[in-house]
Image (tube, rainbow, N blue to C red; front, side, top):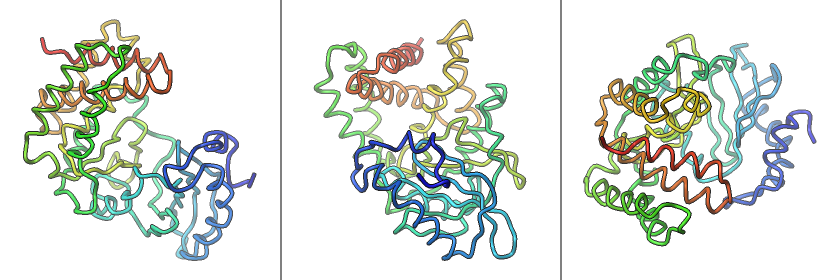
Amino acid sequence: MSPLVPGSFSALMTGREPQPYLSGDSWLARIPRLVQESLAQWDLTLDGDPMHGAVALVLPVRRRDDSAAVLKLTWPHPDARHEHLALQHWGGRGAVRLLAANPASWSMLLERLDSGRDLHDVPIDEACTVIGTLLQQLDHEALPQLPHLSAQAADMERKFASAPPAMPRRFVEQARALLSDLVADAAIDSRLVNTDLHYQNILAAQRQPWLAIDPKPLAADPAFAVTPALWNRWVEAIASGNLGAHLRRRLSVICASAGLDEERARAWSIVREVQNGLWAIDEDDGDELTKAIAIIKAMQPG
């Protein structure tokens, strides 16, 4: 394996099936060429050790003028297809600044943030306030190229209709009823929404305290975006001593900071966690199913 690719990242990508573009193994084999092409295209030099998330390799680089940046190479998959468009539209307001992009190679040149400082260890109320503030800052009119939440909702409804018994029937029926009400809103696809805004996807910066990275942009309802802040920092939620109150507090703080309707965010959280529970059943992941059911219980009204 190329020294550009950490062993931990290779382990994550090896064996991944195409979704639907390239397998993880095929893409890993292309990385050395992709890096060299990107360095030449944007006149860059490598400037540090490689980093990675779940599906992207990030290389610190220097530009021709010696300014710092990072080169991000993403495994081709649908969630990342429009990332460059969203970042371009935000123009650095609330999110990492896009300096250049090559959609054909799924590569981007981004401003360099402080990769060692995210919201994971920031006190939870403060972290949730930051998330809400960024959700408000990133709220823009939807881009025409983006997939629509209404289409995802239709797919959810089909899956809920045939949910296996491992997901409690009362929660499935509740999610179906809530989803029917939520999609009746004509504005469901009207806003540009970062649907993966959580504690590790927010990094410290110089030009404002915190900036979002790795968006999964969707034409959606902004209240749909709150749920990832519930299922992340899970050990802390469990250790709180009152899981329901802790998670409801997170949701309340985020909605207050973002100017979102709390009941709508609560409804989307139930729907999304039923969806997550069904994924967990498909993957035979009992821990994730337990987490999903715990969040659904915490989001119950009253």
